[in-house]
Each structure stands twice: as structure tokens, then as C-alpha cells.
Length: 585
Image (cartoon, rainbow, N blue to C red; front, side):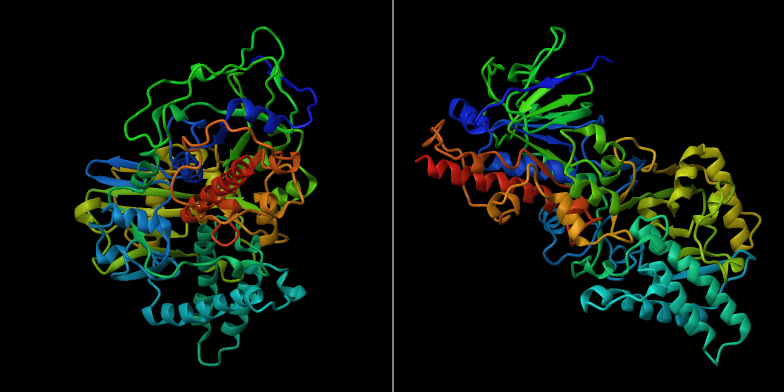
């Protein structure tokens, strides 16, 4: 593929000078997930008419992926609305009637949300034994007591000791082990079962955190993540319905699919392509289908990249199209940033932002759906949890590639069967999930069947008639499921990742603004193309803005965090241009 280079000449104030001529800022949003769609929607509703969303894949939604099989919808990505009180995803879904078919059994207020709160989790050992219910309950109470302690280091500013290695996994494993070993009432056989259960619980926790191991999750920062109160909900018709609701008010021409970005050239005084084979993009290159229900006004027509027109940012696409812009909102995953930040930005990112990208963590959590002709589990069972008795003394959750299946923590039963049929949903995370992704469906189905036979003690369990699974780690547009605060990182790194470029001392532009939006369009007919007497410091910042779940300090790893981060970055631009146009009146 031919190279595409952008060049630029110096200019005193390219952004404000260009806006005097054009009257409308051009905003490019990279990524059509929840963050990107929320940002674009907010801008369009406030009167921005020159907005383009570039999506690398063939569909919108990002890490939301609902797959319809028969009459049921299965979630390969986002599954739950985590909390209802003040959660914008919940309110959007509830107002649109998406939760009307949600059964009581599909609502959970537990910290670890299963598909059903009805029934009990069946803890099984690799010797085909079921762990007694009273032993499970005793261990669960002990584990949850220690888990609550992990929150206190951040919430109460407690120092962590050297023995914990500032790791949630190390602290939890050692604290629970010590309490089990010091319990005078348990016989040795019971103690050994409980010690083995530690590893299974930590595997579940790792899937929840999307980390390879809880040993990699920061203990001092763990309590900063904030849970929204209220029940967790699923969307029976599919989480993709939330994505479709966000996209409803966005004109069709705004979103360009299968448009991966190679590089963002920012801080350009002017930027024009070199070479006669590469043509700059004008508005006429859009698909002119404006769509129904547009809130963004008519599509701008006839814009061309004039010789003297100045743009601070140029987005270079993989197909060599160069798209000039005033602002770019980057919503790509932390996994993509880790893999591509050196080539994705020109000039390179500031040192502190690069350090934040390195310090923060993102891992892979995958699902494995198995559909059976008939259930082999009892009606009282809502999950099958795998406990390896030989892991009682283990201090690691890393396995050699050929033993990747040991990282599968268990299978949840999908309820109600009238909707889903007889389906189990398995969970696996970390490096072992990446090994699983390389296997074919037949091999994964065979291994899962053997595990189910081994742990249930039932050699007659048939192979599933169908398998469906995710592959977030090997997907080049995500490189992981969602983010976490890795040992050595903190919420401050999330803030650094979210900080717009270029940096400025202006508190209004550099440090964000209120996400509260005023009614009405910012760009009304009363002040089209008014000259802006803005100084350079007011308009040059915020060429590159960052959103996505990894940029929300308290709600990272969640869909509501992604949506709110997109609205946050849109609000920065909305407030800046409101102030600029007010200065020009």
C-alpha cells in the first residue's frame, strides 16, 4: 500500500483563521462504538453539522456484539447493564421498552452477576465430586469478607504492605489462605477443598476484571472503581438495541464503515498531501444518503481543500484517503493504543500519556456458548463451577498452552430456557483465552465436553450441537475486552489518558468541562459564520481528544463509562465553541 504523508507550513492561528472562512468546525470521530456514537450524537444535537465517524469494521457497536441464533440473542460482548440508579444505559433502555421482557431471574444485585439468581451454583471438583453447599457458603462468606478489605486501601487511603506486592490477587490469596489454615473447626480435608476454591474464585474475578490474573490488578487503586447502585439487567432483544438507539439520530452519511485509520497527524499548521496519486477528501466524497430523522442538518456540500486552507489535524486512513479536521475524538481501545501508539500519532504522544498507556492494563475475557439438545444439569443449578483440587497450594493462574482449558472457571446456565434453549455460557480470560481463540470450534467443543464429563462425573454427556464463542484478544480492532488498573497504575493514569492534545494551561479546555448540555443548537441561524476574534490559546487546544471506557476514571470497563466518556469529550468542544461564538458577538 502506498504511503500517505501530510505536510504542514507554519501559521499563527490556523484553527481560528479557518473557522472565519468556514464557520463550522470539522470533527472526526474514530470508532463507532458506544463512546464514538455518543460523542457524534451529542455534537449533532448541538448543531455541529460537519461530523464524520470512521469505523474500521463492517458494523457499528464496537465491543457490543449481539448474535441472533434462532429466536434467541446471545451476547459475545457487553451483556449487562451494571446498575440502574443514574445509569444512562439503563435509562435509555428502560425508556425505550427494552427491559419489558426481562424476567426476575435475569436481574441480579450480586457483585458477580450471573444470568440467573434463581437456583444455586454447583461447585464441582476435577474428581467428579460436588462440594457440599455448607462448605461453599462458608468459603463464600470468608472470600467476600476479604474482598471487601481490598476496597479499603483506596477508599480509606490505607498503605499497602510489601508482602501484598500491591496486588489484589496476592493479597486476597494469602489473606484467605491464612484464615482457612488458622480455622480450628475445619478438618484438613475441608481446608484443602477451601484452599482449592481460592483459585476458582480468583479465575472468576479475573474474568470480571478482564485481567490475565488478579495478581496483575492494583490493590491500592482497586477501590476507586465505582459500582452504580441497583440491579443488573440484561436486554432480551440484545445489547445491540442500545447501539441502534444511539445511532438513530445520526445521518447515514456521517458514519463510514470499513474505514480503518493508519495515523493521526496533529499539531499541523497546515497539512496537504504530497504526491499526485493522493487526493484530499472533500465533502463530496461522502455517501449522500442523509438518512431519516437527522438532527444534524443538511450535509455540507462542495467543500474543497483549498491551497491556503489551514487544518490542525489530518487523519490518514489505511486506504490512503486524507481527511482534514479541526478536532479528532479517538475512541479506540486501550489494547489498540498499546499496540499502535507509536505509529498512530504524528508527532508522537507526550511522555506522560505514553507512560499511562503502558501502566494501565487491558486483558481478554471470552465467552464460550454451548447449546445442547437436552439439559444434563438439574433445574436447581444455575452454574457449574470448576475447582481443581490439585491447585490448593498454587500461587499462579498461568498455565502452559496445552493446558489452556484449566483457565475456564465454569459455565453459567442461561435462563429462561424458553428463550435460550439449553445453553451453557463458559468464561475464560488472559493468555489462555488467546490460546483458545486459535483453536477451531470442534477442538474447543471437544475439550469443554470432556471437562463437563470430568467435573460432573457423568461420562455420558453428549457433545453440544452448536458452539459460539468470542475472540476479543485476537481482533485487531480491539486487542482485548476492557481495561483495569494494573499494578503500578492508578486512576491518575486514566486521567492522563483522557487528557486532550495539545496540552495547555487553560483549565477550561485542558481539564474538561461540565457534561451538562444546554438546550438548543450551538450553531443557530442567528450567527452562521460569524468572525471569531479568538486568541490562539483558546482555539488551538483539543485537536485530539480521547474517549472510551478506559478513559473514565470511576466507570472504566463498563458500557456506561464508554457512553459517558463520549459525551464528556463532545461537551468539551460544545462548551469551547459556545464561548468562542459568544466572544465573536
